[in-house]
Length: 423
Image (cartoon, rainbow, N blue to C red; front, top):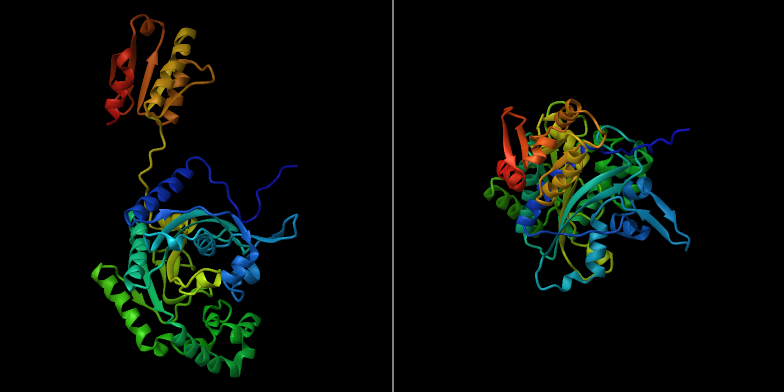
């Protein structure tokens, strides 16, 4: 009986994993240019972290978390998102005490949500995220949004739409909350059970409901922008002004509601407008969360961040037919003839690799013709041929596989010769 891969997971095989490595490098390099440093947190945490940090009215906590008890009876959960873990580490390690503030961090790693698998959505998925903690300046909001857009554009995506909204401060949120309750309450029985439960706890989440999105009350629901107080409105205006000054195009959508409870002020999503990408167009989401650090036991500290699924990013690249500049071949393949040459080939192969040159040789004792075919399959740039004659003359026959040109090179200078060819 064969053991099958768990539903909602995938194997990322050689030939495909190089795309992931390239994407992660581009994102990492750009984060470092923005002075964000990497943080790595555990794959599982206390369940309470996500109940308190993500919000007990969210679908993630109510329906999607992988929870279990360890042998000590502690309730643990596989992390469904990265922000709560980063904030927990920020508090636990007292990063708020560092001299350089704000604390600017990025992370990448697997997340877990028990949801229905579909194209681009998995129960285990890889998320890349950014968090900036310690500043209330609208400029850091604009920086985070421009960084997110920058990663996508660096990778070659062009059919993008940045959608932003303001959820306001506490006072604005409270005024809007009351207006939403008054709007939905008379007909809340017409909505799904989730919306009915959210009416008093977090009515803003009703606007994010997928089941009742076409209900007539959704279209006429009070807009948060109409309830922004002067301070919140000024904050949002500054964010927009900074984005405009950086030539970051955006659209304001007052119906945009992020799915997590901890957001306030700026909220945003980046969507793909590529033809054939699918019904779910969101690639990236994020926003400001000024109360989250306190909720997890830290001092009053503002924060903002975003996260995106690399699986969704790859799907967008495919939809736009973007070919990543990835060379999957080897720089040099060694073809050896005869036992003595095969033994010497092991030494040459080691010298090439020590010099940082991607190299390979035959390990199946194949004939010369089959070794050349293997070099082709490995997409080798150069093939180095050694046999008894070459060993006696201390030479290596080097063939350029692109042009077919061949030349003899002294064994002592062989590695430097290949290195010079690859510059």
